[in-house]
Image 1 (tube, rainbow over the protein chains, first blue to last red):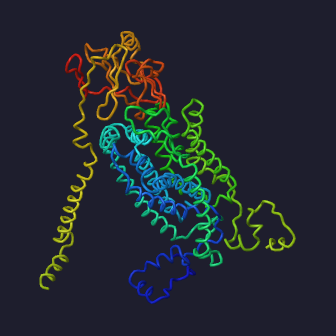
Image 2: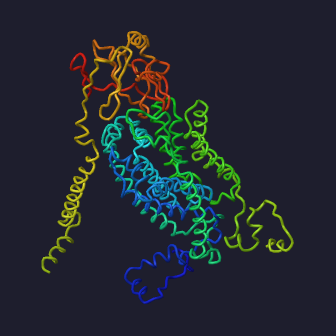
Image 3: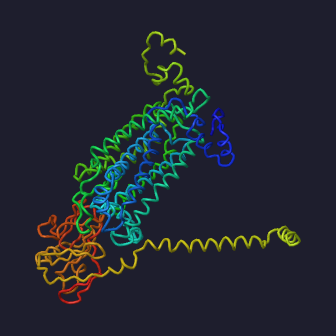
Length: 440
Length: 188
């Protein structure tokens, strides 16, 4: 690790010494998630969501592996193996299935919070560009995995979701249709598509786990960021990961798992769609096709193109949807402000919350049936999304005067806490004795 | 040792000329590269439609019971196909539309077979994102142009199944088909 004061690993028992000389795996773990990893001491609650994402990945892998023991990947058997066998006959199957179904949603909830944390606190900036980009790779893999998993129960939404999403490829001229037929192994989703989706749905979580290791590795080179965005300068700025952050992450994990349990046990189908309890029927489309909630913002961007302009509207929609994610790979170079944390950037901060609102509006539009008003709203929101990243972010730097940064992490939290917690320039309440400490 | 020394000798001798070892390296790596690419071919082509899927690529349809104004939905390559017997009013409506005003300009005659203009056979797959439009079944919403209406994103097709309004870029696709007898159509 990067900091000279990181506690070195010292095996205590003869066996651990023996092991350390041959396979230093405990040393690796100690340095990555143990007392050997110094972490800025001022991390707030938003920094818990990386560990939470890893927990939900683990839950998905474990529940997924056991569900696969009872699932039939056949066009005739898939629906019944999920809705009859797993939901009714397999011991505890209903729980595993609901846990897996809602685990996917919670995985996306914590990952979205994790991503927006990164957007607000400038976690994508140097020297953590690769951490950010690897995170985006994980996110893309998650989307592919979630989509293919949703197809597996072979209900109406599964089937038509597969039809619509593979239909994106047919938007590309000339090569589009052959690619789509190649991906599906047929002219419409059928046995061939179901089997390969199952195979890939089983594979990709392990690929995600591999990229997660790269993500953490790349993070541990500069070390974790922090809410002030100021670099770690001395040992006073950090705390060992264990026991301090294992305890804090543990508390938040308990809190989030409680929410997850509430949804899984009491409203397990709240985030799903009733049409998926109808077996797939290739000859009839449900009246209102929507993807799962975590795809709604992108679905809204896809649908916001209604006019042909040089290229067909459909191709514009598909290109816009893909580029809405791909442009995030360029974010470290679009936002050139040297100040990382949004807390010290008065103009950026406002536009950040506008972006959050914008994505929520896109989500609402993407999940609701089409109407002229909602289409127009979606078009404005989609345009603003691109405007934010391509125009507003690069321009803010020119007009913004960042607030003064604290000298160090420790001075922001240890001495004169009141003065540092509220950004300079804002009046702070000074009460009695604390005023002495404040006046540094 | 002697062979090694002589090999080193030849290596050092060449200033700009190609050494024997360079040739061996390039040849060996190229051979392995070609072999790897060749091994990828079966990994890629296994994804294409298999023989059993392709075997379903023709379907015979009995159309003797389809009266003018009616239509049937049949399955071809696991996709719905609309077989519709147009009324003379629907044919007249389709022919009355100026072709140049269409997004995907085609006449009804181009979309049907000579002498069988009343038989409109198209895929029941919306060209937008692949939903099945309504309008083939009795009492279904045919949309404002009397053809088909896609409930997913509101594409509207006319009586020749041509796109008239909504996000779809193309007319409903006309599959390859032939009349094997006056009352039987072979699709595919």
